[in-house]
Length: 173
Image 1 (cartoon, rainbow, N blue to C red):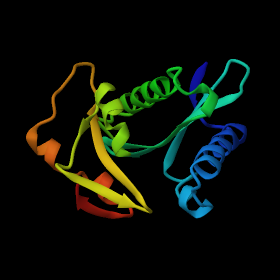
Image 2 (cartoon, rainbow, N blue to C red):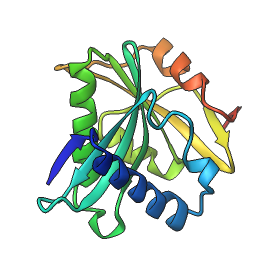
Image 3 (cartoon, rainbow, N blue to C red):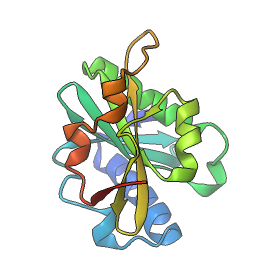
């Protein structure tokens, strides 16, 4: 298996097909909910493929200076539970570190918070969650460095600008 940055049209098409299969067909998202104006302009797409080139997972990254937001992590159903998402996240963190990013953020649904805590992310924003198109989303963050760094109380209770641009409504849980 290989995780790479989607550079070619073929790579990009594989990313879009996986997103269509998972987010539209499996989760019922509408086209305008899943795809936006940022696909080609300000996002980096990661693509996980089997050795034969078969696409099996994806993730989109928004990089803004020293911060990055991981978006749309997805793995094809029959490959789930095999560590693919772990490899995609690792590739995303490696990419961010190479780019000088110091903090990575993402939103997850409440049942997945524990999963992300096991991956070294920490919940941020105090008790705030984002309500977005019928979904409850919890913000989490990981510092990117070669050593483990704890989040300060301010970091745990603050929402960074990179997350505040997200559509939706912030509420207390």
